[in-house]
Image 1 (cartoon, rainbow, N blue to C red):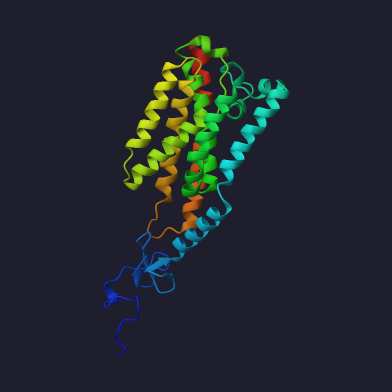
Image 2 (cartoon, rainbow, N blue to C red):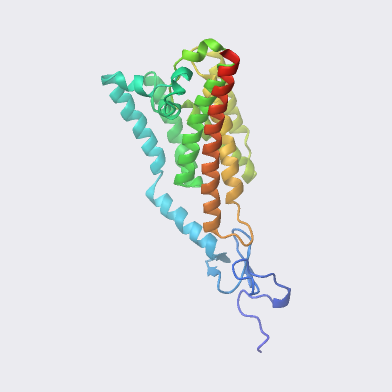
Length: 287
């Protein structure tokens, strides 16, 4: 009777792999979410099969985040609406926040602040509608801080693309670009990456991206450069964060979160480095 396996335990414990969190202990089951082996101390019972303690903690955090709602999405929408209203009263807001490649070299915050400005009622309406549609689900899937990082870096990526375009069209050196479109395109690209990773059909989001990109090319006074830049940066940021978020044997959820934070900081530094490099190339080429 002493050899009879208990609930969740393998019939031959010697054949079981070691627990990643407790290498000296044999595993008794596999996590139904990350498929990592678990020792008896790491098993968290659920209605159907079991979770490891790391995934159980992640699920609890995700539930708390879902209960709070998409806070970052609403904050971004609120900031855009507030800036739009203040801009109607005081043109100084536009002058202090709008991005041009010429001014961006001495006031780099404009690479981001310009994403909170809009050129008219229809401009802000469609951007905020897109942010509302995509942002809520995306923030719930990624988590608040990852979503905020994605939004900010995509917005900066859009401004960077506008700067790069000066190499091909020097007359745009003093051209003003405003709007959250670069950030929104980054969100669309993030949806594509997440769907691709999950094995979901991506044709609908590809059509959406394609139509909006073509619209930017065909309609005057629309910055297709910002759209393209935000899309590329958004895809890269999401890919980096998703790749690190995958559960790995022996790596705890906390360690994965720390790696994600480090990756986010590294991507922000890399983007800033690209901005500096682009300005240096511009000065050497255009004088």
